[in-house]
Length: 348
Image (cartoon, rainbow, N blue to C red; front, top):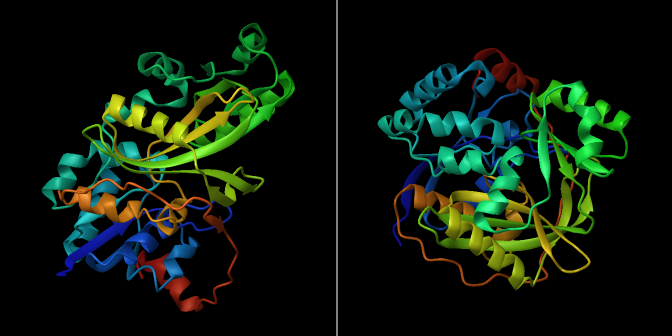
């Protein structure tokens, strides 16, 4: 089989206790037999571990945070592309997706392809819009509302029973049992991620998740359900197992078909004691536990790249049930010169 020569750029190299999806996404694509691959890592911080993983990335560039504006980020991508000739770019953070979606035409003009949700798809599944999303597509979701200041906190008891979930618009979620705890988490989340902060009804049950890939035409290219077996204090899965869960796959197919979802997604679900499934979050990109799907027989990162290249991709029909992943820490020994180079020159 002739391999496709591919220069891939990916963000999300922070493979820490709050891991980004970049390294497992790259790992899946490296394991594909379809590509003659060169990987360009795009990092925001000089201590992102992926920078120093030479078996994963061939070259790394520091890029500006999306908060510095679309223009600054795209100018940097343009400069990198003039050297590297990027074919496909995979952004892996919620906070950067809007910037890359907005710049899609500019990226295409540079010869860079992405496979991202539309801005409408991205906006309507926001945590603050989830109740409307649930009504529109006939799915069960917890009640929620955005709050913008401390004075809104007093009225929470009029609409919700404690405990409630306090969530950031991009990341972070805490259970609050009283008004004082809401204030603490409101301050913490708003300082980190900005406003609004989302108050969400607490649904009691077991958290389960689905990773999926939609082709933008209503078809599910792949989907793998799992249950977290070990969760860190940041709420991240440090171990998980694939499930035999046809009802979770049916829900995923329904959402992808109804929304015509384009790109990767993660559904965060609560299964109640009555076996009802509530959608508590829809993350609009591939999650950090994606390598479990690869190990279970669905190489979704590879499929995403093929879709970005305009290739026809046949949907996966099965996955291995009872496959587990367990994360672990690994100390890399890095020459100080590498750190100095990435810090001073912005590339390595």
